[in-house]
Structures are given as structure tokens and as C-alpha cells.
Image (cartoon, rainbow, N blue to C red; front, side):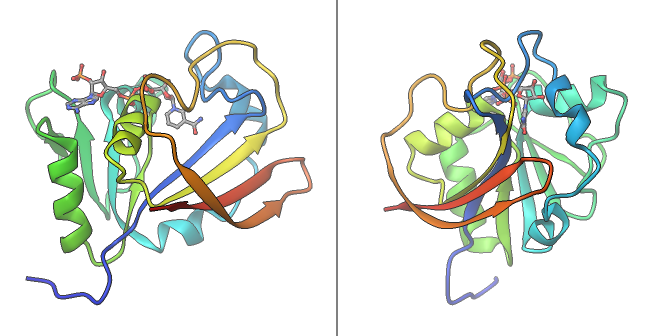
Length: 179
Ligand SMILES: NC(=O)c1ccc[n+]([C@@H]2O[C@H](COP(=O)([O-])OP(=O)(O)OC[C@H]3O[C@@H](n4cnc5c(N)ncnc54)[C@H](OP(=O)(O)O)[C@@H]3O)[C@@H](O)[C@H]2O)c1
């Protein structure tokens, strides 16, 4: 049993276009391809987390693109009702997302990274479980695709923590969700 002074935070770390999309109209993430040369502080963010929650569609997209899902050194939960077996060290989870996150906030030693996608994020917002949002704005308008904030979710107020700008025009905003 791990005893901590503070609960772990659940952090959404994601990129979106200026008009709010996380995928192109064809559900790809091609709009991101020309921005892959820098890590935008992703590695130092990864050092602050030990647990990853990812929706099945986001996981599948990585595999479809011919990559392995990263984060092998983290505790990874793939959220799915249609996949039943664990994949390697990754755990398949199909129960209540709220129960899982409440448990992980107590047991994780570091913070919890929500890797998306929109369906998972809206559920977490609906249950008031998101503590911070780090969103990197890509200077592109797509006029279609999957919105970062979609479906039903709780209204929330955010406090701006910091903004980083990058030479290629990306702007990374870091917010905490006021509870
Ligand atoms: N721009 C970025 O930085 C970024 C980041 C992340 C993702 N993306 C993109 O976003 C797209 C995927 O997002 P998405 O919103 O469509 O999908 P998603 O949130 O990744 O996954 C949704 C799927 O997760 C499962 N699921 C959701 N809630 C569940 C629950 N409570 N219990 C059990 N299973 C649950 C369901 O799959 P089952 O049918 O298996 O139950 C559902 O279809 C991909 O194209 C990805 O590339 C972009």
C-alpha cells in the first residue's frame, strides 16, 4: 500500500488545431506530420507520470500507423469493451472509468497521463476527474475531423498555469481545472 501526501493528478496532454480538431477529416493525424521534429517538452512531461490511460481508438490508430504503442515502462490501461485480453504488459480495462481513475489517483506514485481520445476525455470531464490540461495548438485550420471536446462533458473553469511558444508556431497552454 502506497502512502502519499497528495493524490496523483490526471493530466490530459494533447495537441489540437487552432479550430479545435485532434484528427483530420479522414480520422488521420496527418496534420501533425510536419511538426514531428521537436519533442515540445514531451520527454520531461513523461518523467512526471507513471500511468497512462488510452482509448481503444487512439491505441489502434498508433498500431495502424505501423508503430508500437510506446510507454512500455509505464502502467498502461487501454480502455475498451471490445478487446478482452491484455496486450503484452498493457492492461485492457472495460469497467467504470471513474472507479479506475479514483483507484489510480491513490495508488500511482507519479501523475496519470490521459493520451485521449475525445471519447475518453469527455467521460473524464463528466466525472470531474481531469486535474490538468496541456494542449499544444497547431497553427492549422481543418474545418472538419474529430473535435477535442465533443459529446457531453461538464462545464469547467480553468486556471492558466503557463504558455510555451515554439519557433515553428506551436503554442502550448497548460491549465489546471478549478474544482
Ligand atoms: N491530436 C492528438 O494529439 C491526438 C491524441 C489522441 C488521439 N488522437 C486521435 O483521436 C482518435 C481517437 O479518438 P476517439 O475519441 O475516436 O477514441 P478513443 O477515446 O481513443 O477511444 C474510444 C473507444 O474506447 C472504448 N471506450 C470508451 N469509453 C469506454 C468505457 N467507459 N468503457 C470501456 N470502453 C470504452 C470504446 O471502444 P470499444 O468499442 O472497444 O469498447 C470506444 O470506441 C484517433 O484518430 C487518434 O489518432 C489524436
